[in-house]
Image (cartoon, rainbow, N blue to C red; front, side):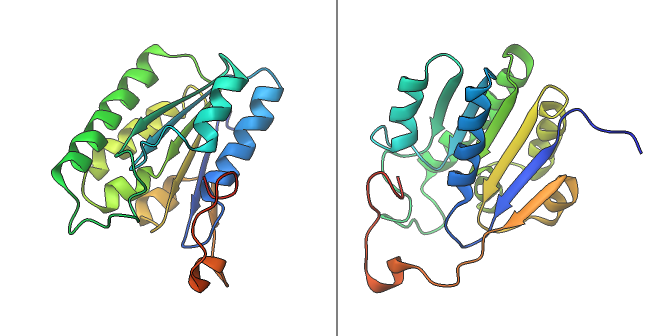
Length: 179
């Protein structure tokens, strides 16, 4: 069996920890001098911890957001407002440019699967870009609902399953913990 140089990781499910797992991997990589590029779909808030941390970590960690400046679950759209789709498409275009023009060791595609599930971006083109991205570096993908083609493409797939969550008791997202 031939050993691959770069692998595709997939973290999905209704449980907490998908983005957190990706960020933990990013922190470890930056600690080893590797370059991490993170693209976030459906997220656009500048006050979240990972955006603040990216500024502190310096040139080896960058985040690019393609979503509204509020948490999407705070304002659930009926089918998604048009600006969400426009931002998601910009994210896919940015991904294409990143693959062709940017050096990275780790590429994190946060909530990418959700943008596909919501039909904001085309599945076939997204899969093609993931394959190209993995030729240059490790690729980490997150999202809630698994897309069978993504699971098949992944070298590592982890389902984050909610057993219980304090959100169910009315606790809201907390700074430094959930964002």
